[in-house]
Length: 330
Image (cartoon, rainbow, N blue to C red; front, side, top):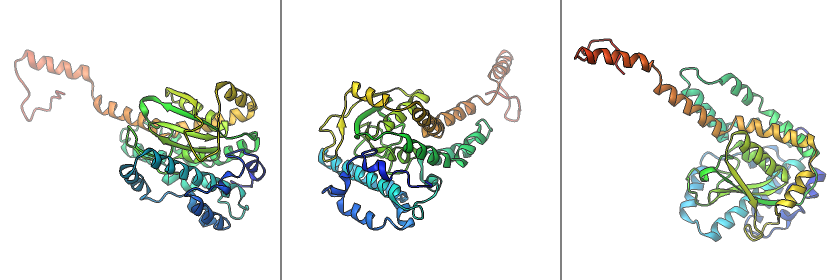
């Protein structure tokens, strides 16, 4: 971020509303207080967004150790408060403290970037348009620019809650994982590009094979655009009033969500769409599809029709090639 764009709108409930994190008396209050004291230091602010290499393992340990309803609820609220406080400190920090183009600095820790590097290493046949994807990663700073532009234009709203269920219980958005999952692929906080992006518009997590989101309707719109661009089937429902306890949000039925979307101007929607498309192109889901193409290419790395003709000739002759015969068979 290059300028303090969020100072006034944050206090007007643009992201998570009403300074609730400042007055929260939950288990995360002490950590939030520590973060406040470090707000003037750029390194400390950057550290709040940095995922330690061992954190993914610690999340898996937590899942295995205690996955009771009460424990998961506490973990989720603690995560939400950490995300909220971190974003608040970022936007309210002076220009000298706030990291410039933070997303580029965090890139190595994103699951999307790690999967891209894997695909790049596997592409021995030059099947992928690596140059185009590499260019996107090199220009990742545009993500921060678009986010800043969106925040300047989005209207203040009370944080709304909803659930996003994707196909087969997977986590295509790579939201931070809390609790036990059907598909055990935990994602730590801020360990994905989408987690970073959505953190600017609210709080999110992936629990019990569905995404839980609380925040500005822009986050909802981003998620819909993201899934639609990748042709991922998904469903969205309002988050019930008692689903996330000890965290303030509105449970809005469909007509109210429509009203909120109508409050967004076309320019803001276009910018959200651009952001979603960039993230979709760089997503783990897209990288997985590219790797699947490599798998098919390895299976089909010769002319099958020609090989069948060779086989038929050999069978007609009642013979099989000698060990030193160079005639291809399969």
